[in-house]
Image (tube, rainbow, N blue to C red; front, side, top):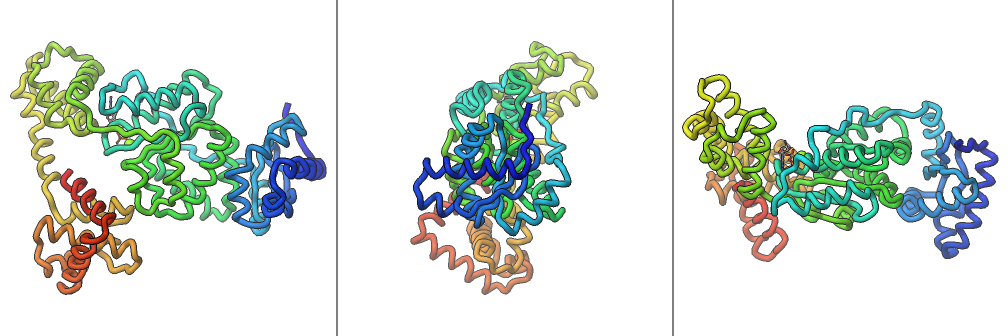
Length: 454
Ligand code: ADP
Ligand code: MG
């Protein structure tokens, strides 16, 4: 039975809580963060406490949440969730408390197709696989957060769902939430637009999530408000021992635009990389796919497996796509039961040709790589904003196009929204000069060149 408190009971419990708190922290801290706190309202098992400043909200949420909740548990023998708010937010909260609980992320689902059992393990992904096993056996106990990072198409999303599925199989009472960082952004923006106060979303997480799986966290970079919110949620979950697993397409230290505090948090648990799969891994994945289609490996020439593993093996998503084409071709255009190399090559001809096309280097490809890297849009890069980060990304793009494609300055000016050729030239020279002394910039450029070359 959960205890229902009246406002005056809550106020008296808060007084006792403060007394106990003051014996477990130094006087200055107590004075700075708790002295002027008071109860705003109580809604079911959620208690809203007003504290003097935004900073106090942040500090308390990240450092003292557990301590306070433990004291209240001691006093009431019941679990309460404490949400800290500032005085000005207190006005809006009254309204949202009355509106009742809202369901966030209602479209988020864990995909049952992705499991630990059907993930093929090899040297390139063994650590990531082991981290996934640990996170799912004892969520929140060993490493928190677990961060899986690496290029696209190498199994990060697969592992995230697999963790969710494994946890639910063991303990269906746990509330596991899978969210794409992108959806997190949308959800947050809608939430703010709906003109309510942020506190409700944090409170919802406190109530509704035991394990948080966040996919493609790179999308949070440069979204300051959302990052702030995510930071509070993360701190709460982490300090309450709830497992958080994150994926990113690169190591957070190279995620430009991501709050430094988040960068440090993300790598503070267990960061593991997924690399390009070895040929044997690709072959096993192909065997698995053949099996899933109800076909027999005996009907495939060994050269076919070899060809696919070599040609498409740098990205499992592409490997799967190519195999899908082969099956389609084989089932619709041949009468044989046997798949030989010639048929296999024929079936993916378009794909292989298309692959070369998309691989060839163009100005657009460079701009798109740079914009990706800085979490900007290509339009921002070719535009004329003088915001430092955007201007830098633009200059770097110009430099890379010039050095990698040798495009004439005038032509580049046109590409970049009708800029003068001297503007482009100045930008290129500026970067050329800067990398002579700026080691970090030099590294960024090298990193980008690697990405551009695929
Ligand atoms: P990422 O999130 O890293 O871009 P995904 O997890 O979406 O990649 O993987 C792309 C596809 O490849 C998915 O269908 C996934 O099931 C499959 N895949 C990737 N790695 C493996 C693996 N080691 N074993 C089995 N399937 C894999
Ligand atoms: Mg993914």
